[in-house]
Structure formats: C-alpha cells, structure tokens
Image (tube, rainbow, N blue to C red):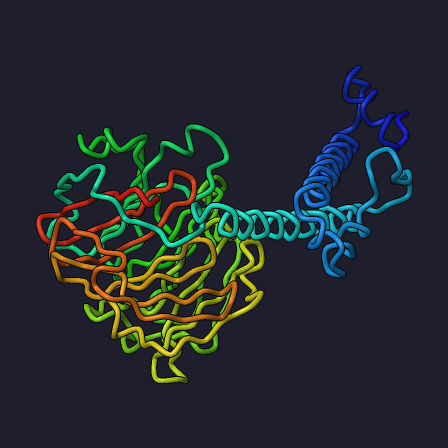
Length: 376
C-alpha cells in the first residue's frame, strides 16, 4: 500500500503499483496539487528575483506562506477528498494571484526601462483582411483563444454570428480553414448570447446571457456551463450599449493581466466600468469607474491593464479617443493623430486584443470583412 507523502506518491506512479479506482483518483489529485505547488514555488522565485519590492509586500508574502515549499510539505495521510479538493482550489487561486502579480510587475518595469511592450501602443496596418460570407450583413465576432493550452488550441478560430438570438459557435482548425469555410464543428451554448463582446480564454468562452444581467463561463472541452453570475449594474436590455446598439452592454477582454469585463453602468448614466474578473469564479476582484459613457465610443479593448476606446464604429479613419489606466487611475482624451488606425469597413461590430499573438481582432458587418491588426 502506498503512503500519501510525495516520495511514495512518485514511486507509486512510477512503478504502477496496483490501486483501486478511488485510490487512482486520489493519487491523481495529489499529483495535481504537487504540480501546483511546484509552479507556485517557481513563480515565487521569479518574484523574489525580478520584483523584490513587490515580493516583500504583505499580500504576496502571505500567499507564498500559504503553500509549503516542495520537499517540505507534510504527508497527506488522513486528508479527506473534500479537504484535498479545497487545497487544490486554494493552490490554484494562489498561483493565479502570483502569476498576475508577476506579469503586472514585469510589464511596469518594461514601461519604465524602454517605453515598449506596455507603453503607448501603435496599431499597425492590417496584417490580413478577408471577407467571410456568414458575417456579411450580420453583427458578428471572431477570435482565437487568448491563452491557449496547446498548439491546436492556439490555431483554432471561433466564430459567433449574430448578437441576441443565437447560441451556435462555429469552430475552425485555422484561419485558412475559415477562409475556405471548412468548419470543424458547431457547438451549441446552453443560452443565447447578448452582443458581440465574448472572449475565448483557456478553452472556455465567457459571454453575457441574452436579456439578463448574467455572465457565463462555458467550457468547450467538457461542453458544460461551468458557472453563471449576476452583475448588479449590468444592463440586461439594450440601453447601455455601444452606438450601433446590438445588445452590446458588456464587452469581455483579455490582456497580459488576465480577464476583464467592460460594461455600461445602468445605475450611472451608462458610464463605462472596468472590472477585473476571476476566471474561475466570475467574481469581481476590483473595478474602476470611468467618466465616459458606452454610447460615446465606438468599441473598446484592454492591453496591459489599460482601456482603449475608439472614436467611432463607422469611420474609415478611426483612432483611439480615450484611455483609462487601471495601474494609475489616470484617464485621458487623445487627439486623432495620437493612436490612429484604418479599419477595412464602416460598421465595426467587434474589436478585441489577443495577448497571445499580439493582434487586434476586428469584425465588420459590411461585406463581412474580418481583419487583424498587429499592436506594437
């Protein structure tokens, strides 16, 4: 019989000692916990090396103290399955907090040292424009996973047609397959979505459930709705939208810091709110209230914790007219020559930055133009 210490666990797995089904599940959970603790230790070492000031802060040090270092943890004999599941959940949240702390620290350092990366971006000319017929005359969205778990996931493209009466997501193996309209499969979500502000992040799609205040996480791998949460100040109708309407009351975003939700506050004149969202629980970790309304901007995206809002959804010569930096709390109005870009159409229905490939994804319902713009 295998003991539940780390060394014994490794030997049991290595030599294939016969285990019952329940024991196999337990060892699998123990191995998952071990992997998380290894990742936490490595991330802590990176923080200690690259971000010594942040490393000494109470919040970070508290999280690190909550997990034992590899080789020093006690035996897990006598720990119930429920207690083990709780330890895994806590370790996952610890790793997420430390990872985001490290990303935020290194991004800030990059701004301070050379002014690139997370400094004021430039939106380059489109790296690829094509017409996709199903997007013609339909408000749509398309995207790749913002934090893919493998190469297949990184290549995959997701297409969402429509904005309120639809729940069918079309999956393509690549952009080239999409251009040929060779889809891999169609996945039906349990609910219709609202608007076009969805994101795919770590093999899950995050979207607003149509005609409700609820946001939903749906796992593409398991084909299940993992969690649903109500957002008190989100508009469940069609009031606090972008100017073209289309139930665009919420706009999920992913950047170098993780998952965000941008929405017009129905309780405050539809002024935009930027909310940092926990991807596992959908809880709001922190939020920032802006002084600009959802109806006065064309679209928005996040990069390095900064909200960028376009001037219009219908102008061929567009530009970023407003920014809000959650790192500093500073908001700023920009001139037309500050961060300009030229969209390929005159009816922009979706705009999202993908931190994995560094591209800004764009959808237009006129002729079904889809495009990507490198951000540097």
